Figure 1 (cartoon, chains in turn purple, cyan):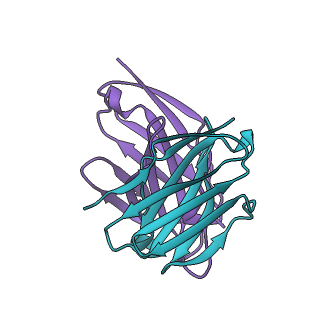
Figure 2 (figure 1 turned 90 degrees about the horizontal axis):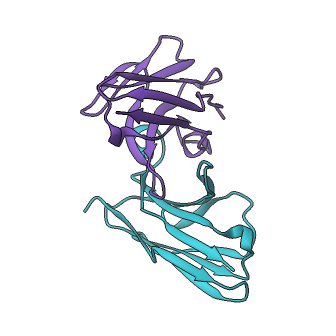
Length: 113
Length: 115
């Protein structure tokens, strides 16, 4: 099971780019990296998933270096509504692996005006 | 339909009550999950169903009893709960397991208060 480590909290201002890094030193060959966003009293929401290099969608980018021991979620030009907890999960869910089902402590992002 | 729905939104129950939480998805997903989340903590996995069969039970006390009547429905039956069981109960589903197939879609949760 790949353990993940993220900063507990981060502060930013509206309009800035925010980068949240997740460490996963013992990531396995078949593991994917998935990020979720959660607002208070709501269910987590899928943001982005990747295996290697860079993935981009309409809300975020995910950068994964060649050794895959870390990953960085990049949120461009954040707004107040991006204030939430962001979770990084690592695993593949196959063969009994549950890494992609285990939430770490997450990073609480606070965006200020 | 790309939603996972959960009912009720809120539930208050006494320690001797029996109640059930309901979760529904119509995305054709083959995996369904129950998580428990305490305030300011990450979600904790409780149960995983794969093709309507229980595949993972994370050593959850027997006062929580899951049931999957069909591929779209997931229930969590509650009996003789303790006040420390008060939490947000989240249901999720995924197309399958592994990689993109394992991407989970979460419902809004049921806020449970045990008195």
